Every structure is written in C-alpha cells, then in structure tokens.
Image (spheres, rainbow, N blue to C red):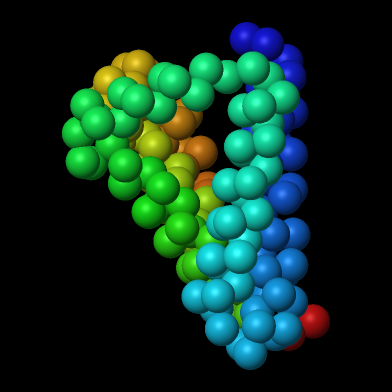
Length: 155
C-alpha cells in the first residue's frame, strides 16, 4: 500500500472537526442558518473540485456519461451534503468530540458490513475477531466520550 494513503486518511480526519467548527462560525454570520452555511461550504468545495479538475487535465467531456448513470449513483452528493449540514448542525449542540465519535462509530460498524458482504462492488475483506474487537473498542470509546463524565464524575 502506498504510505501516503493512510496519511491522507488521517489528514481528512484532522480536517473534519475543523470543518465543523468553521462552518459553525459561517452559520453565525449567515443569520444562524445551518442550511445556508452548508450550501456555501458545499459550493466552495465544488468550486475547489472544479479548479482541481482543470489543473489536473480531467476530460470534461466524460461528464456526458452522466446521462447513463443509475439514479442511486448520484446519492453520494446528497450524502455529502447531509454530512456537511449535519456536522454544522450537531457540532455546537453535541460538542465536536461527541459528534465525531458517533460519526466514526457509525462509519466503522457499517464499513465492516461493506467489507464482509462486498456491497456496491467493494472488495471483500475478512471480518475476524481482531477487527470486531477493534469496532467494539470504538463503540466503547464513543460511550466514554459521550457518557464518561456522567459515569465517572467530572474531574
């Protein structure tokens, strides 16, 4: 595996709480509208992707194939918008750590199902005891991040 890939994945993880906090500040400037903040954020992201596509010489004519895609293949964009909207809405209400712990737990649990069953043509990977234990530890971490102060008292 290319060593840059895990580093890039880690960097994405570092950026997510920053994105939620920035979008929360943007929301404050936009009349406290979570929806408008998410719209602006997604629009800036789209502009960045368009610029990157130009800079890397992507073939814009390949977009003509969009007419042949199944409707559900476009849901990724809607899911991305839901993520940006959801993190902007939930970060100030739950706290960034609590929100992201729940997001990560959901990702790990469902990702194991994708690995096990190869849904949407993803490669099959064994779901063994160490991986299940890892997921259980993530869920345990979520419980501690969200309820640990209630269980152990505030320090």
